[in-house]
Length: 338
Image (cartoon, rainbow, N blue to C red; front, side):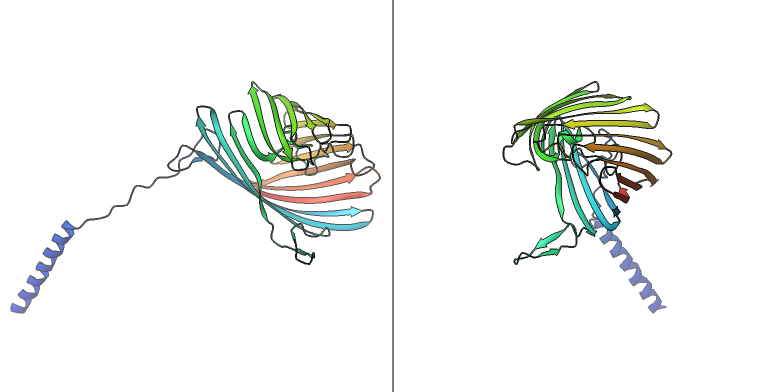
């Protein structure tokens, strides 16, 4: 009995002491978590950067494609891939919306044409590099109507990249540049003036440009011109995209100069016309483009875009030349976007 009493007394004493210590102990409580908040001011996908009033959207895509070419009985093939990662940050100021855009891009290819990514050693020999190199494809700052930085040029983007939807979308001479411009917009109308140094320009930059567009539910019409300082000549482009009936879009564009500027491919002029029709998850399209050149400018294109699932698109396409080139290109492109 004495041993039992002693054990019970010791246990009671230990419980009392530990209880007192627990009462006196300082318990560290976790800080309240700050969850990312949705920013619906600028559309879907934006969220507030924690601790700031700046909204950020992250997007991009992975694109893989295979091209088979039948060139007058001589077959060849190529494969290509591209990745893009976009960062779009915006916040409101006393002067309007302050926006910055960054786009990282990497391209790679292989096949009959050889690799896109190569390195040259100290002996002057070229070797395949393997992985694609990542570069800055867009770096833009805008405030209100002002834009400053590097991206696809205004003369390119104003007209919507040639034929609608198509991969081979026309000989309209895609261009990138570093630029400064100002845009006024109101009630569907916009007008822009700016100055740029094109990546394709030679000595004599900067070049001056201006343009305007007007649009609504029926479509959009646009016109632009650019002064090529090195050639001391002007090139111009006009385009129209019309939504004639539900799900049917028709587009046409024309561009011209005197054949001396860098802004028109295939000689003095180039033009294209195309149409696309959407039903359910599939868009079918066809187009035709031509230019002032002996060969290589005149071709037709047919294809379709199939939205297999949210964020996944499959695009088969055929391009057939109608001038003296006996050539047909078959391309399959798969794009996963987010």
